[in-house]
Image 1 (cartoon, rainbow, N blue to C red):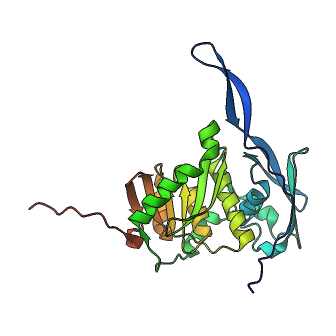
Image 2: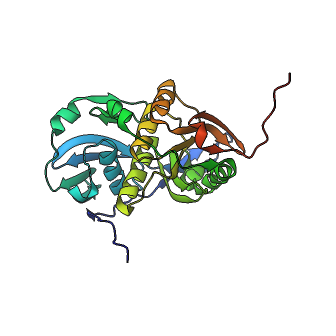
Image 3: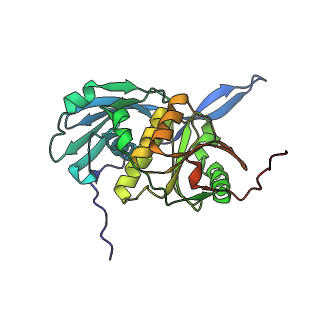
Length: 281
């Protein structure tokens, strides 16, 4: 019998995803309208304030764990004793078995990213990416990619109700969606998925990561940290995102919609069934 992965003590403090407000349409009619939630959540690590995240509040415990994981502030899930969210104080307290070494130094060097709501990366993450190695013995067929892109639309429940959110998905190379998270910032959604992966002991080395947002340096770095070789977006990318994707060897696919995509890096992992055009002499 497989041993269950370790789980710290967790609250279950999910907020409602949407709230109803009244709006007036072009005809002067009052229309009840769903809007996405947005809540400040201040993260404390061993009683030390780290950052305030603006979040949908749909998966706050996973968000906190994923944030600590992706910032390399906590190296292993077993080091975390408890994650406690209290919306009355708009706080999340994370307790570890022993204080994080060099926390002051790691927090001293921070990069404000281009993520929605301005994400922040601590320490020397930009330098660490050169040591990340991704698998080259995995592949993704375009038909499986098209299946994934089609399935994602059915998971975007909050976006369809209220808009104003980004969605991220973790999927297999066969196009099966393992988890889907929506939040007001795409960096929150990716951190929440990282937290879920930690809690469930999921290996990212043969998985696909999908995001509705643009592919910035932050998104590429976090995907590489989770050892995920495929990064897909229905949006575009930034120059730095492209540069880091090349360095890490990620297969980066943008403008993925319907049966269309643009492969920017890592094309060796793609299996295409579409007929190739031959050059005319």
